[in-house]
Structures are given as C-alpha cells and as structure tokens.
Image (cartoon, rainbow, N blue to C red):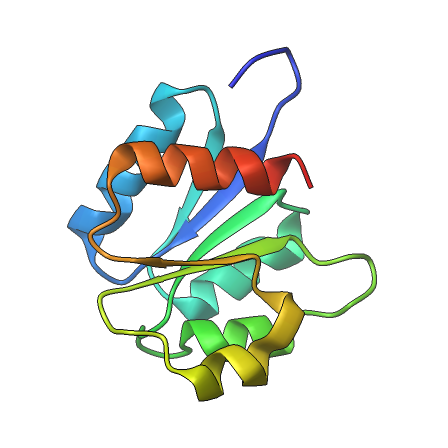
Length: 124
C-alpha cells in the first residue's frame, strides 16, 4: 500500500486464528483493520463506520457472510465485499449474490493473494 490515504478494512471470521492472521497480514502493509468474530458483529461494525473493503467468511455463527451481504443497504454505496471460505463457491451462490461480491477467495488464502485482492478492491 502506498500513499497517505487510510484504507479501512473489516475482517469477519469466526475462526480466531484465521481472523488474527488475516488482520495481521493486512496491517503489515498499512491497512487499518477492524475485526469481527461473526456476521452479527460485522453488521455492528458496519453500522458504526464505512469500510473500504470487507473480508467475510461465508460460514459463521449468529449470521453468515451471505446474510451480511444481503443485509447491506445499497445507499450509501456498500463497501466492496470479498468472501473467504474453505468451501467451494458454487454457481448458485455466485448467481444469487451477483455483483455485490467483488472477489471470491478460497481459504487458506496465501498472504500475497490476500494483499493483492484487498489492494485491488480498495482502488475500486
């Protein structure tokens, strides 16, 4: 990440190790990261401030990533969404969520791929 523009990233994952590692990788290149332990906590954070990029796990307790995406209001423009999962993304899921998801990443996400994807999303 270059320049002085602050990029706010929300990382929501119920697996604490994955969440912490993802956040640490993104912080190491200069992103400002907020963490949420599930979809409900992610929505609480999204109500507080506007994030530039959201990295969501698909399967989480209380509220999954799909439900979070469906709940987001189109106005003001929602943050760019990326969904991470250890499971394959089927065609039905991609068609259902349509353009509301910027990129699908499969866990474990290599650090370089994560950094590149968030950088690309932040530029949109």
